[in-house]
Length: 317
Image (cartoon, helix red, strand yellow):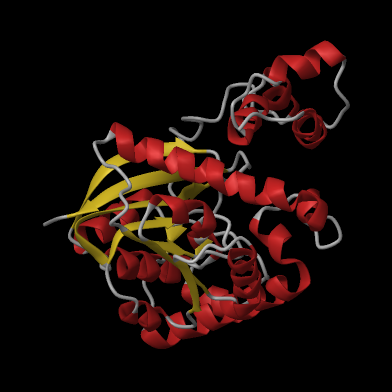
């Protein structure tokens, strides 16, 4: 699907904060094949990088950074308390501004999203295209026989894009308010091989069955590190032998620190951002009887203090 003039205009305003300099400048971007390709063109443009103080680029910028202190394990009681807090925040967001809470963009605010709904769901197809590319270059392929899990599915942005490529998709989320929109979208587009369910405890994951493919993007980062670690291990253990997972999470942030005691003593926020160090991620992968296939630095957290990474892992047979 090619991009439109409206898409290009939106990128100028969102990334560069200005109108296009000419019709020729707009036309030069219409060759982009997907919305995601267009977005990345602007994200890596010299003008955007310079204006955000990122002239040296994003990849590898924290190679010489200082260590950070992250407590990534907690008691079952503390895990429940933290997850309950996360659930309450996302239920509020799902009631107030569900689509915007998934993709923080003014076009997806409650008052604007109806005019931009197609753009919102098209972005899901771009992300699944990228996910498929990761799989293909490592010798894997989505198949009509696959059962897939979209963890933290929100309003179904990725679940509905994944549905035509596999046998079935289960989308799970902590917010019933988000899932209501996902079900409505699936029904209105006659997508019948997708189902959605709400989970309110990590233990609920154990009842979901087994999956050939698991995906989760821009989800785990909104949980405190002990919850993030526990969820990640729980979902990886739901892979069938030989099954694959593609997941994203931030692994570093400058001046970040986490302790369960301090966190529980704080008030918290509705859309928190946390990290799980890469060392911890690899420990979870190994404990889940998986092996890492590919790790790449991504740009799903658009702030220079963070390192965000996408992982491809496979469950051992």
